[in-house]
Length: 125
Image (cartoon, rainbow, N blue to C red; front, side, top):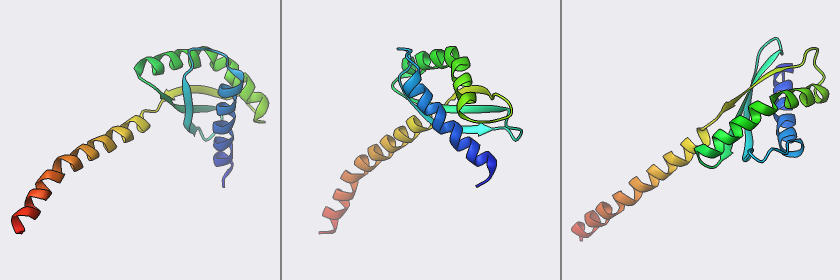
C-alpha cells in the first residue's frame, strides 16, 4: 500500500470520526464518507459524502460541512501528521441513491415481465 493510499484511508477514517463525534451541528444528517481524492503533493483533498435522506438533507448537510470545514481541517491536521494542513473540499456523492434507483427499476422490469412468462408457460401446456 503506497503512502498516498495510507493517507487517503486515514483521512477518510478521521473525517468520519470528527463528523460523528466532534460536530454538534443539527443540520448534519446521517453522513457517510464514501471516498477521498488526494493530490499527489498531499496538500488538498476532495472528500466525498453521502447523506441518508432527500435533497433538503443534502442541502442542510452541505451547508453544515462548509461551515465546519475549518474546524474539520484543524482537527484533521492534529490527528494526521503531515507537513502541511490539508485544504479540504466536500463533494456530494449520489452514487448510493443511483444504485438504489437502478435496483428499483430492475425490480419493476422483473415484475412487469413475470405475467408474460406465465402466459408463455400456459400456452405450451
